[in-house]
Length: 298
Ligand SMILES: Nc1ncnc2c1ncn2[C@@H]1O[C@H](COP(=O)(O)OP(=O)(O)O)[C@@H](O)[C@H]1O
Ligand SMILES: [Mg+2]
Image (cartoon, rainbow, N blue to C red; front, side):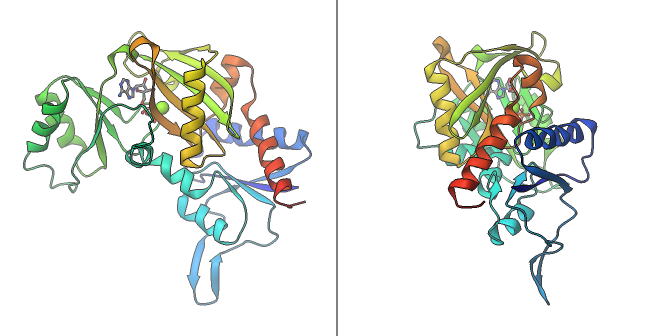
């Protein structure tokens, strides 16, 4: 069986290239020939004599899509090449407001979340009356998130109206959401890796100095055995969003009740390995191999 791993060609840090090499080694051990390509190697192309994708050549049996270039992922899908995760699932996670929209009405506990009205860079907000609406429904502090962000770097806490206005003015033009701060979860969250509908590894992350528990932001980790409520919530979320695999972030609510924070379709696997010794890539590659065989591919 042959697969292509797609990584981002421009975000080429060691963290990403090490991870791609790790997947290749893991696949090799399972008898799968996995080759790595940047997302600039193939272009979605239409019109003229183009029919969807340049440079396709010998088609792989599957694509392991570890980038967020949803347009390219859709072009592979249109060529009827199985893509893991599917472009729809990647898109559902990439934009946090979309994640919350798709999960609402599905009995998934999540923080009260409001989308910030769209404006343009340089135009900003001539009125903050929408903050009145939000203040009316929940108390400060609020969590402000850029809809697209990772590693905690685009997640903020505002203590009052003044801080909220200053921050929004600074971020104006970016898609944003404002969210209830789950205070019981201050500096603490739970990462559960799900593969093929099953939890395969989990860790608690905690930070005494910051409300964000991300390891890249200074959080520490310890292995965690999720209880039934936590595991079921993470599995259910992946089912709704159509994810083959994901890193699900849960917050700790009152009485330990789990609350969905966000879902990562392209979760990194190094930290969870360092924390638990579990190679999540192993489960992901095995799941992809089995799924392809079930579909009659090789
Ligand atoms: N509503 C919230 N209440 C309390 N803590 C939060 C909330 N949302 C996020 N956090 C904290 O901030 C961290 C980063 O937020 P998250 O939505 O996971 O964004 P990122 O994609 O940057 O990881 C979480 O792991 C959690 O520790
Ligand atoms: Mg997160």
